[in-house]
Length: 350
Image (cartoon, rainbow, N blue to C red; front, side):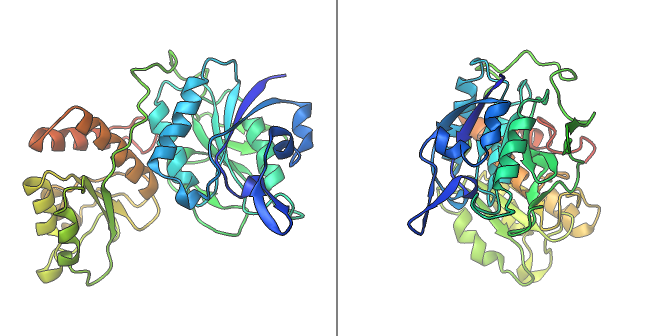
């Protein structure tokens, strides 16, 4: 049978109740008891990387997951499945997509569950089986398999805490549909339509910068509350989660234009704009508040999800700092890389 590497990082999908306490599965056999029928169509190697609630997953974990896949890329696996908690799965899967890069030539499938396996009618068993089915397809990208859909990971966001349809891809269609078969769509990256020579040490970039601050704007938020945070030595990047399509306040004491200018031009801290709305709300607005924010030095993020934009920002900043770039060269580098499409994370015309 085809072989799949199943990487366990924690989350509800692997939990078992023992003496009234939920704990993770301790072995591959115990984990596969969730769905015994897997043994009928796939051989699974079980790798435990961590056991964390996904709220505690950090960029260090993103790098570790990417490395675990990269190190096993030539181990004759048909694909990889990553069992992960749902709360930050869209962040982690996006990060792994950037780390592995566009030369990825096999499926990497993230999945999880809204209920523990013991819940009658729950989604843990179904999602695990379907993720393994997806890992046997010709997909050549990082995806999230959840419910009836397979989404491009870096286009996905979580939308519900309880419903089995926990994720959506607001600006890009599913790359496959889960039916009696796995119906891979023409827009997906596959082994047959993707010119890939395979990952190597040059294309594998698993590093993510620390010190990134995100501020979600609310009416009447005073920039003076934020200013001390960008004046610390540890701040390497600022994300403004803006109103509408990249619009930030521009008038009076609530204007963020001076703060953007100070961050970019005085302190060498790149600033990006994301949106509080779904990803199809572009951040290349023609509205005056958005235009002035970009003129002050803020970088738009097209129609990326806010999660993908935040992850990509950390990824780009790590590359900029590794090169030792300073001042204007660093700003140009970050702006250029943020607006370049790497793994299908945004539309090229956005």
